[in-house]
Image 1 (cartoon, rainbow, N blue to C red):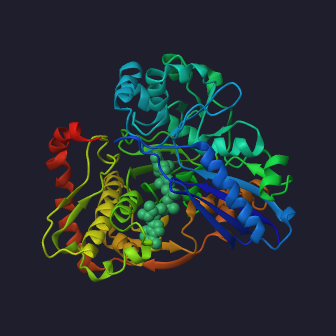
Image 2: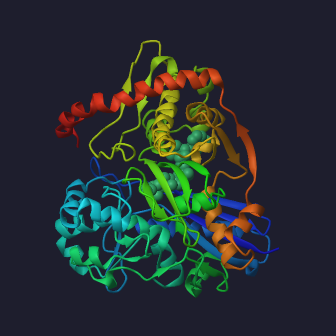
Length: 499
Ligand SMILES: Nc1ncnc2c1ncn2[C@@H]1O[C@H](COP(=O)(O)OP(=O)(O)O)[C@@H](O)[C@H]1O
Ligand SMILES: O=C(CO)[C@@H](O)[C@H](O)COP(=O)(O)O
């Protein structure tokens, strides 16, 4: 039996899957790392920590593997998107990576609109200037840390840096490059226009490759440190949302994905590159050649839950913390939560908004708050579903992945709030599975990712909407939507008190 490895470099942890030729997950390892939050709006990680935790995870996986390591034919990657990694001329990391959920760059986003023009930016990159994307982070470093910027010779994204450390070769692939605001998404090339407008050279951008392209082998040093074979082929991989889509079989029109990781995503497959969503949803290159996807993003989806748990019950596991949420009725006895704890992206691109609990009552218990947090996160994702439905898409069936898909009550809640059938797959590790599929396709096990999906992906359980809950949530959703407008001005005034 042959195997491939899928490495998902997430925001909360690196998750590593060893998958056999039938698509069965043979072994699974996860190693977590923290966010570095120096002040409100900041979010960083140390790239060395990604490398060390991946090495440790791979070593553990190989140690437990009782087969022949030479049968592990390929490895590929899925990665948290947009994070800026700056390297100097010796390819040494210059500073911590500034992550996708860091919102310090509002000023730089305005500068991008001033210099490029909103319409022109949408035409080239298909996306608006959002704080989380990479170009605003590059401009922030240029303005605030000029000595660091002057020493930088190339920029990378998180999983591309990790892969560089495994192979010694620098590349970037289209699905992640799409989230930099430097790529012409339809033409699939770095935008000379935007690079020139910001005084950036072409050499600052790595060479572009396809997600399933072979980009090297495991170096002798990395093989020795992890137990991997030097013969294992390394394939480029994709952005975590592109990989999540591949790992969930979102490979044809009409398929919708809901992913609840640190962020939350509602994603739809697009064959064409010339649709116009006016920047209301992100529009990126897929990890499948020459196709695309659109998505709405909740900045703090799983992160709202992990923040709430870690703040009030750090020692408890998620399952223990969520015990009893199924006993609280739909609507959490009148308690509403908005998950804007680090700002929001879809539908409100607003780095200043913050979360609220509305309607706190003396009768509410901890489990009421926990359920309200799950509902608030799901309402936020429903805003993206509504954008897609209003654009003419039919969404009656959704595949749900990510850490959030581990909880039965949350999956039923998704069916009730989205008013759609929810499918849970045999593995909720969509991005890791997508990465493994890119390696399997790259190794030539299948003629296409679609063929691979037919073998690798299976539905474990389906959740159908409960009509009574659907009605309750319809009413509550319109109240939820009002909280943003009602609290926007208050949050402007609270800004000066934040540290
Ligand atoms: N047992 C669980 N039940 C419900 N939610 C969970 C559970 N375990 C993890 N989560 C949620 O999943 C999130 C992590 O999901 P994951 O897909 O691993 O994220 P990432 O790829 O961003 O690292 C956590 O922040 C948490 O909110
Ligand atoms: O910023 C985005 C997408 O635009 C995020 O979805 C990141 O890609 C992080 O993903 P997770 O760690 O939550 O999976």
